[in-house]
Amino acid sequence: MKYRVRLDLFFESEIDARSLVAYAESLTGKAVSLNEGNPDEEIAFWDLEICRHDEGLPCTKLERMEIRSK
Image (tube, rainbow, N blue to C red; front, side, top):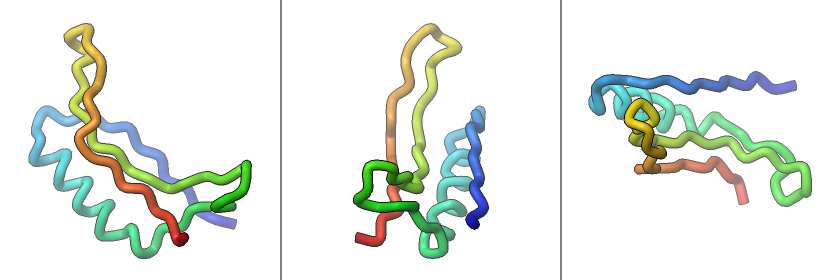
């Protein structure tokens, strides 16, 4: 059994967003992915994006961290 956390949060401030990313990054050493290398793998990750959906535009990915043991 594992405990999964899913978040999809929007911030007005890049500083606030990066603060949460820094905290998530500090925990990546404890995070695990499931069934790596198998067809049913689930890779743990976090993404940092600029979201412009409120302007009718798509998101732009700034950073991504995937947690892999291999």
